[in-house]
Length: 334
Length: 196
Image (cartoon, rainbow over all chains, first blue to last red; front, side, top):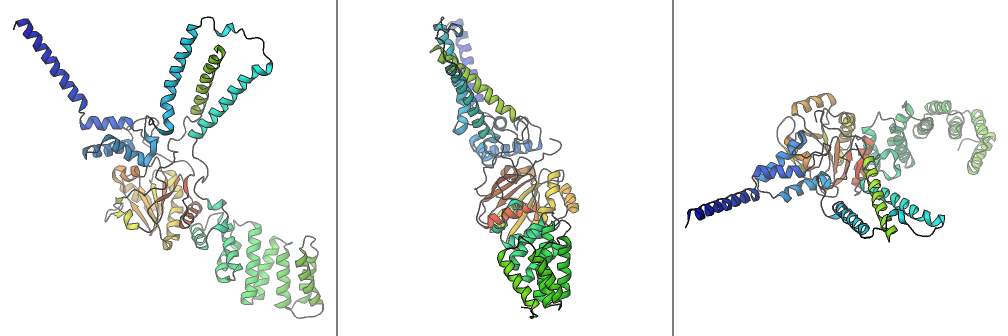
C-alpha cells in the first residue's frame, strides 16, 4: 500500500468517525438539551409570546423546573407536553398543533404559496393575458358589481368566522350563574339564606331578602320571614317599594301573629309615610283600627279612600265595599 | 379564465387583509382568556402543607364535598377585593358540605400569612402553600384570582377568572348542588406578579 493511499484511507476513516460522532451527539441529546427543546415549544402563560425557556418570569422558571423533573423521571417529550396541555390546552403551544381546527394554519400558507406560484406560471405562459388586455365586451353595471359584492361578502364571512374562533370568552358571568340577575324562584331557600348571610352589607341583598321573606310568609312561616322583613325595613339601601312591602308585612304579622295593634299601626304608618297611596297599607290599617283599636270611623274613612282608587281590582273593591258596609251597619269586625 | 385567476388573487389578498384585521383587533388582549380544558374532568390532586406548616391537606381528604379552590396572593388587588366574599361564603356554606381551599400563588408563606392576618380568615377554609407552583400549573392558572369549583364527585364543574362576589359564588354552588355544570366565567381582569 502506497503512502498516498494510506493517507487517503486515514483521512477517510477520520471523516467517518467524525460523522458517526456528530450523528451520535445529534441523535442523543442530553437531558439539558431535551429540557431546553421542550421549553422552547411551550409558551409562558403569563407572558406575551415568549417561551418558558426564554422568559425570566417566575411562572416560566417553575414550569421549566417541572419539565426538568419529568425529564429526569424518564418521561418522553410528548408525555411532558401532553401533561401541560391537559391543564392549559393548546394555548400554551408556541406552534399550534398540525391537527384539528389549527391544521388550517399550517396548510393555508403552503396552499397560498402553491396557488400564487400557479398564478404566476400561468400568467407567464399567457403573455397576452394581462389585466390591461381585458377584451370582454362591455358588461352591465350589475354584472360589474357582482364580483365586488361576492368579495365583500367573503370578507365579511372571513371576519365573522375568524372572529368566532378567536373571540375572547369574556363578559359578566357568561358561564357561571349570576345570582344578582337570576330568577330567584330557581334558587333554594337554603342557598338564599347562605348568600344573604355572606352579603349582609351588599346593596343588592335586600331584593333577595324580600323574595325569601315572601316565600316564608306565603307558607305561614312568620318566624323565618320576620328577621328578613325587619332587615329590609331597616336597610338604608332598600328601594321604597321594598321597604313599604316589608313594613306592611311586619305590621300585619304583628297584628295577625301577636295581636299587637299598636305596633302594627306604627309599622303601617311608617309604610304610609313612604307611600301614602298604598292601598294594601291603608286597607290593613283599616282592619287593625276596626278590629284591634275600636276605631270604626277611622277604619271607614280609610276604606272609603281606598275605594276612591280607580285602579282598584274588582274583587278587592267588592271585598272592601263589603267591609265598609259592615262597619256602617255597626257590625263587629270579621 | 384570465379574469377568474385575477379574482382568485384578489380573493386571497382580501382574505389575508381580513385575517390581519381580526388578529390586529386582538393585539394586547389577555392571552389567559381561554377555555379551561379541565371543566368536566377530574380535578388534579394536590397534597399541600398549610402556610404555617403542619399536616398536609389533600384534595382526596375533601372527597364528597363541594370544594372551591382559589389561587390568591397579597400582591393581587382583585384577590383583596374578593377576599371577604370568599370568606363569608366559606362560613355561610360550611354546614352544607362546601369547603374553601385558598392556595398561595407565587408568594412566600410569610407574606401570605401576614396578608391573611389583616384580611381575615374563615375557620372553615384551608390556606395552603404551593411550592414551585406545581398545583397552579396543574390547574392551568394564567393569572390570579382564579377560582375552580369541584363537585362532590371530584369533577371540575366551574371556574371563575377574575374577581368573584358572594352572589356569583352562591349561585354557582347552588347550581352544582342541582347537578349542573356552571362552566367558565370571566368576571374581570387577572393579575401577574408585579415583577413579571
